[in-house]
Amino acid sequence: MAAAVTASAPPARSSSSKTESYVDNKRRDDVRRANIVAARAVADAVRTSLGPKGMDKMIASASGEVIITNDGATILNKMEVLQPAAKMLVDLSRSQDAAAGDGTTTVVVFAGSLLHRSLSLLSAGIHPTVVSDALHRLSVRAVDVLHGMAIPLDLSDRDSLVKSAATSLNSKVVSQYSSLLAPLAVDAVLSVVDPAHPDLVDLRDVKIVKKLGGTVDDTELVRGLVFDKKVSHAAGGPTRVENAKIAVIQFQISPPKTDIEQSIVVSDYTQMDRILREERNYILGVVKKIKATGCNVLLIQKSILRDAVTDLSLHYLAKAKILVVKDVERDEIEFITKTLNCLPIANIEHFREEKLGFADLVEEVSVGDGKIVKITGIKNMGRTTTVLVRGSNQLVIDEAERSLHDALCVVRCLVNKRFLIAGGGAPEIEMSRQLGAWAKELQGMESYCVKEFAEALEVIPYTLAENAGLKPIAIVTELRNRHAQGEISAGINVRKGQITNILEENVLQPLLVSTSAITLATECVRMILKIDDIITVR
Image (tube, rainbow, N blue to C red; front, side, top):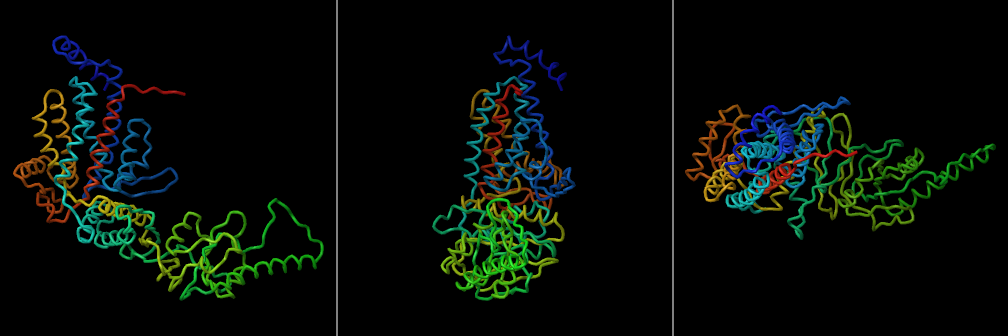
């Protein structure tokens, strides 16, 4: 690579006396080229997994863990990237994941294509700052073009929401289940939207519980709570409670310990009996106080100081006909209390009826080879929902969860910004066409740069066609032709292997996914272009 650089350097210098082009010194060119090449290598790694016919990647870690996915953000997160500029592309896909949730592969492929064009512009002797400024103007104009193509959407139009969620799922490993998962994602998001703040959706209010066994078809949306645990059966307590009064407790129902490490030496049997009797009375007192409020379901937070419950306390709780779910994680408490509309209780002295949650039914259900606890019919339920994901093996379940997350993010995007655009490479070709026409109106270097970058946008339809095993050049040429004739929503129909009106095929995506992909990719490329040296410090 260095040889190629040195070979091409002298002509530029000889011509510099005739034309007023700026010749950068060689080291800076090398650093910039190395950065661009490294970043493009990352983009090429995920390029084959773009689109509904994209390939999947199998990621094997040193510990023997295997992940099968074609979610760009997951692939890049798991890759060990050492080159600093290439790491920027990993962060790019992560920020697209945070901003839109979908389009993580698209944004990286975009950036790779823009970098490729930047390299040819730089080697033509154009200054990086000129290239960078042209790129900024292009991104602003591209977003305007997208807004011009957008179709407004009403949240009551459930069909369109389902179509766009299905489009997101079509490129995943679990695409054959998109008819089940897409409506499920739409219902999940719409059930957590707060009418007071309709444009704020917190996906933490949608809890995904994974359980091995069955197939992805058995995935269901639960209006209530699901615990991936079984009821404590130690002393034959109840496993089903109707008209439940539920308490979430953060204290332990076990004999108290002193604050310091100590050991008590008991030499006398009577003393030993006395200790055991005291323990028994203490636990009995606690259980009586719990029973007095009418509480019949206990959710006990995991404790690190001492056992949250002992066999003795479970025995008394079972006698009092109280259903016990123990070892509830600390970070689940907030979600549980929000769902049940109750308060966590940190001390037995504060145990009062007004802090309890109410539900019609709490029961233990056999699922696959394990058991789960379901709480349904919650009164005054908070705006949360739970999705129980099933699958035949762990790889499928993990991928189903990631795909579902992308679908949820797509619906969230549509709630935040209520516009849809066509998919299938249509918006990219339309942007490329309009920006190419705009480049002719500009003057000087800028016009040249914009023209190059406008062509770079064609990488998305090109890659879609390539991954689907079609002839990319023929397809993209025809697509360009159709758009020039004014068919704005003509796109690549991967299933039929030809160009059709994509809106009729129900291939829709949120406007936010495309606009954030353009702005984030151009921002990242501009940053890489501005770097002219890498300084390592101790």
